[in-house]
Image (cartoon, rainbow, N blue to C red; front, side, top):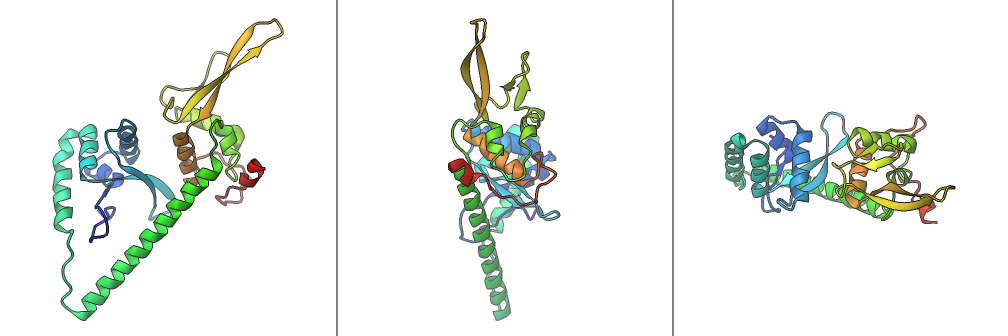
Length: 248
């Protein structure tokens, strides 16, 4: 249960989607998908962020939910487990106010713990700010997934569409062209249509998948989580070497 941030007058208390998954017995990817859908529908306002996995040190997405949004999420996932979440929130709220130190060593220990937590939060905030700035530099309206992937160091751009197809974002139509699947349409991708005149004079309408901002953000998260196809020559660095080239 160490995934919960306890609030000692430093901001609102939240619960992670990982703890919701633990309490309801669901896989975290299922909980995360439902949390994203609720935000997209405007039902909740939980924030997606990245956490560092304690075993492999890699960063993965999670949602931070306040009390209301966590209850809404669980009601959508598993109504029978709502009581568990209510009980857990009561437990957390009872722990919200720390015990007053009774001795000087206890006071020093508390001060050190608070300073350590503050430093960790500042580090996470700087990391999130850097990621947001990276996306601002990388994403341009009208980009295709391949064009966006070219700006991510080491990604095998020739395989990005196949990877998105596996995730249900894209599919090939009868003409062997990439099209946006219903799951991702208007959520991660849209389509740009153009007319192509054939030698016979017949006009053919061509559809090209185009990234939305949320789609670029999700691909960037997959990149940082090492879930995109990478070149064998990749140097292991999560950099954006193509930014200056693209801006030139």
